[in-house]
Length: 81
Image 1: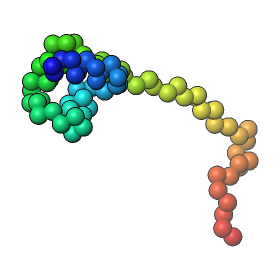
Image 2: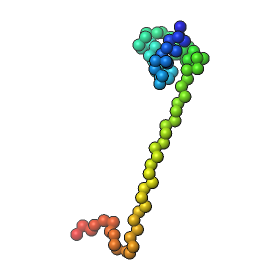
Image 3: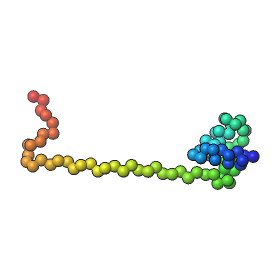
Image 4: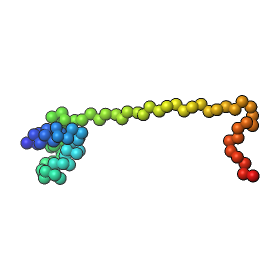
């Protein structure tokens, strides 16, 4: 009976892992099953989801800093005077 409920639940909610499936059973359906028993059947049915790693964002390289041709052409900050 637990296997049938787990199969139906994982087909309806494909992104749910064991934690969400188990919390759904007692809180929504009112099933009094032990989490160890449900976990054992969940693993026997091979319903484990592979956690996909997040893809890294590709960032553009920053532009090179402008180098002045001669000294004292560019000031980094103004004097307060």
